[in-house]
Image (cartoon, rainbow, N blue to C red; front, side, top):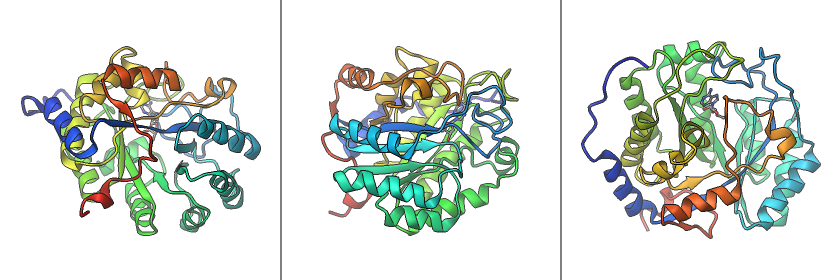
Length: 321
Ligand code: 5AD
C-alpha cells in the first residue's frame, strides 16, 4: 500500500451501518463453506494455493464426501452451501453437475460456486444443474496490478466472465483484496465503484495477508481499519449487496475483526465446514483462523443481530416490489 491517506468522510462506518440497516435489516446470513480442493492451475503471487507452491500437501474431496458434507450442513439449518476450490480441472463439468444436482435434489437450499475461471459452457451447465450463485472476485480493478498479481491472467477476461454469469441468471459475487503491494487508495475507490457499476448481488472484501510460501511472503498485511473503510464505502455505494465479514478480517484481529465488520456494513458470515484433515492444508494465507458455526453465531449475537432463517437470496430483485 502506498503511503497515502484516504480522505474518508467522518462517520463513514456509522453511515455504512445505517445503510445496512435500511437495506438489509438486522438479519445476518450464514453461508456454509466447503473448501473441497486446494489444487490450482493458477499462479497468483499472493495465494498459498498457487501452482508453484511445492510446500503444501494437496487434497481433493471425493464427490461422495462433498455431497455427504453438504447434506450435513443443511441438516444444521444452513440454507446456502458454498463450494470453493482452487481452479482445479480434475473436477469435470460432468462431475460438478453431478455434485450440484445431487445436493439440490434433496432440499431447496442455495448453492454458490467459487471455483474460478472455466470455459463458458461449464457455467451454463452448472446453472442448468441447479447452481444459484457464483463468486469470482475481481481481486483488483487496476489492470496493471492485476497482471502482476495474476501471471498469465487478464482482468478483461475476468470481467467478461462476471458479465456472462450475470447474463445467464446467476446471482453474482465479486470483490477485492485490500492492501496489495503497490495498490493505491484510488485503486480501492475504483474497486468499490466497479462493484456498484456491475450491480453485484454479493461482494467479498478482505485484507491482504502474506503467506510464507509465496513471492509476497515479506510484504506487510493490509490494514484492518482501511479494510473496514473500504467495506463501509462499498456498502454505501452498493446499498443492498450481501457483504460478508470475511475470514481474512478475523485472521487480522481474532477478537474484533468480524464484529467490527458487521458494524461497518457487513451482513453475512461464512462459517467453514471443511473437515479438519483437509482444512489445515487450505493455506491461502498464514494464520487463517477457524470460523466454525458456533463462533459465527457468537459474533452475530455480540453484534446484537439475528440469524436469517431464509436462503438469503439477492436483494436486488426486491427493489421494485
Ligand atoms: N491474502 C488475502 N486474501 C487472499 N486470497 C487469496 N490469497 C490471499 C491472501 N494472501 C483470497 C482471494 C481469493 C480468495 C479465495 O482468497 O481474494 O479470491
